[in-house]
Length: 442
Ligand code: GLC
Image 1 (cartoon, rainbow, N blue to C red):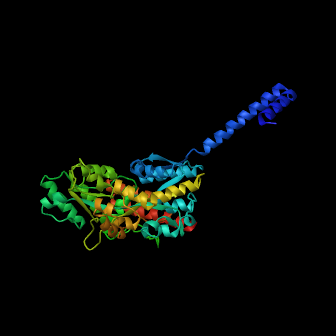
Image 2 (cartoon, rainbow, N blue to C red; image 1 turned 90 degrees about the vertical axis):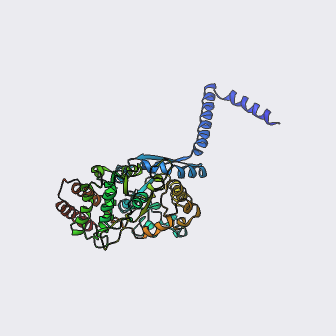
Image 3 (cartoon, rainbow, N blue to C red; image 1 turned 180 degrees about the horizontal axis):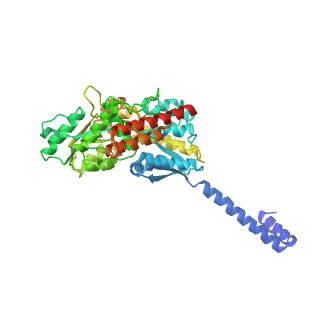
């Protein structure tokens, strides 16, 4: 008997035995099952979407890396949520999303200073056994260390940062001056060039009450021979005379008309835009400002250089070490895909893309000698040395609160709302109480 005949007989048999309503119901179930079946197939082919929050400016810079990653991994889509520019505000947003329970972020884009807190709170996936040691061998040690907590790896750095002094080569040359070494050199050179009518302002820096203020301050503090918190002993140095010397330098910049009064409201990009307008001799900023200053249409294209931060006589100039990395949120339903993103962003290909496109500093040593990168940024190899001499903000689990204390009192001292000595006495006392409470609790 052929198949058609068999089906035909079966149908007739069923039709004759089953009441027609039941037949209809069975057909309906069949159709429904097929829909579910095909929908499941279609759904399983939908890309996984992973979300991460980052400062808006950094999200824009990350586009080149995202595009390449998505092209290579069509099963994964990245949703970059743009947040405010200040690192501490992004940290607040991540923190509240974790405290509320079900964080909407699969990946955590982290500033180096948040790691101890996030890891201690259990918000991150431990990646120690998921990334082969060989993949980590060429990372700059300080950056890699910044991703570890109690010996376990929770964050892979995809960009390092170091505070630099930008200076106008043309203006200094014209005035017959050498680039400044000391705080006083910088003030004097600024005033000379301002008085000659060659520049409206001498120096722009980050004076707003936010994380960038303390990043800038640790440089001046270290250049004055002082310190904030010793991470080994938890000693606090904020009420020592060196701290007051550091504050005095910053207050002098405004008092002497070298810095605009509005500098106490500036973040990185306000300083960068003013410097790039051509009316300023010196600027403190991170390396991202370099390629922007040299872009077509910039008033300072080819007319500036970078060097280590100024300091007090007899001291060394040191830049603050910053930087960003990626970790995996403990709430993500897609930890494997998230790990692929971490490895790509922090891997040689991702880091090279963002270095070429944005001038971000890689955390992989060999990239500092990559011919394509060096051709574009001849100063990269020299930066390795500046990075090695960098100054860290204290890597303690209570960092966010310690930074908040310093931000508040320092801002009060810089804007004249408090006398610097009283402000730093209070800042030191509060920081000591915070660290003692933390030590007692652990
Ligand atoms: C840069 C640094 C980061 C720092 C921030 C302060 O993004 O990489 O470490 O906290 O600036 O504004």
